[in-house]
Image (cartoon, rainbow, N blue to C red):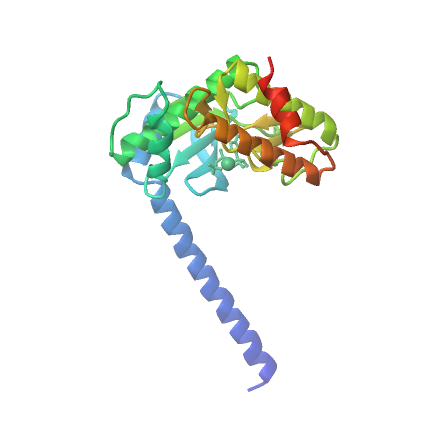
Length: 256
Ligand SMILES: Nc1ncnc2c1ncn2[C@@H]1O[C@H](COP(=O)(O)OP(=O)(O)O)[C@@H](O)[C@H]1O
Ligand SMILES: [Mg+2]
């Protein structure tokens, strides 16, 4: 046989096999996200007018998937669905235990995830009340959180700061430090996973997301988390050419 043909055949076979694998993988992920109870939750949200269509995946994370949803009135919402099976229960339990707002004393995984989603919803509201730029939450139901979609009118989600560095890094940095300060003093929360991955660049305005693990300032680990957030932000902004020291930033955030 012509060696060129057999090589092409082999490449084609490989492509087909990869495609098959990918569709098996897609199905596995789909069945992991859309288990029976999650589907029921989505149906309920649809029946209550919160959601019409779920139509595009924005992100597949370690614990949650984020989709675009079309709301009844036609506008887009972000739909964050926590996968019960891949959630980190130990972490959730640890963070929730020290939070006086939650009285969940359970080992039940589903109940823990539901509390976790409720925590993200409440944290977003606290941030909004403190005038911090975060997506406005719509509703939390079981393991599903609906919130304002951050993106353009054509449905393109805003990129993360990691993917799209700010055009004016100094200004963006200042805005962020201010947001961290408001979060600390007014919302009385520490983000706990702040970095360029959890900040969206929405037309050059930073929008903070992913506040499920954010803790109240009197949580025993809040100081430790604040120190880590400061380090992450300094490290990411160094890449954008902004230089600051840990102590200087900490001082700015903590002083009234
Ligand atoms: N409200 C939103 N609007 C647009 N995109 C979003 C929104 N929330 C999350 N995303 C996208 O989904 C990704 C994952 O969301 P995130 O809340 O950080 O979950 P994870 O726990 O998986 O990190 C984000 O990096 C962002 O690209
Ligand atoms: Mg995230």
